[in-house]
Image (cartoon, rainbow, N blue to C red; front, top):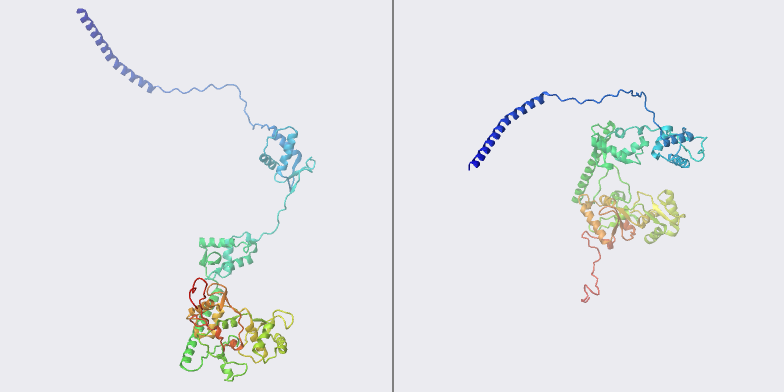
Length: 519
């Protein structure tokens, strides 16, 4: 027991000693670390030591080092100096030269170290663009030399150096720069006449681009239209004085025309009122410029000259009812030129004027008419052949006193095909049938034309709708009284309601409508 106690005490004693030693060591270590830190701060870092310089002598180069030329390049320069020389007005193809050089290298067993692009650069650097083969060279006849093209000494036009903007503005100023603008075709013609070297007539897009560019930047004004259909003028510039005067004169003329039209309308209305009040026939008011007596003339104008005497050839025109107008009358009088063959003229005279001996009197009458200028021979060689064209503007279809009048009637009546435009037909109705009043009632004229088309009296050749040219569907040769406007053929009367003389009857079929009915 006592031995065990001693062991415990000794162990405790030793443990206390170790503890005391550890406690004494820790503050000493802390002091040492602080001292070391202070020392490190004070110590400066050492500089790196340079290696020692060699004291041996080194040679100093005062000039550029000489470049040693590779053997391939040296061979090229030698070959070029031997066979090629600089020469004005001549040149050689680079490709052929390179091919001959490669052949030479292959014969000498030398590798080609130069590519074609480097070969071309070396030749240009040494000889320039113009060079040829030496006369002493072995390739003199083998390699073909190309002669340089002579420089053109043609004088260039001044317009090629000018800007398109300045040219366009100059042309617009010359044309007067009107307020309504100048049409593109007029600008094109003016520039082509003044500056032909620009070739604007062949390349109009250049002029159009210049105009559109000017419009975009505000130098040129587009008055109306677009592109080649536009009217152009210089923006902000005033028009020329002479153009101002022209515009004013045109405005005055338009005003005068309008006033004259209004006066004519008033006079017509007054005359219509007077005619309605009295039983007298409507008389057209006298105008300052009387019309020629011709196919377009009304018989009312001739009333004073006749003095009530009815002669053989003269026929008095009666007023046609509104429901019995024929389109054939309009077509035969508005058709131009009036032309008929000799056979048709002769046939017309035999049928309508049996008292006239057409066999003996027709040929000499036609010869005299050609001399007088009443008609001309449009085809054929002799008098009894071919066709004849009427030249008179003042032919009166009502007169048949002489054989000349009869021949004129025959040409007008026998001419085929009878064609006319809508404008000419409308003008005829307005001049000689004012009671229809087409100006204020255009639908009446339109319905009449549509009705004639529907009933097969006329057919449309050109145009769409109420525009273009119309032609009579069947050949129509009117007698003298119908040509004068006195008689109407009842077969061709058409009323305003669109009902023709014939009634449409539904046709029977074997199977279908009216199949099981008795007639």
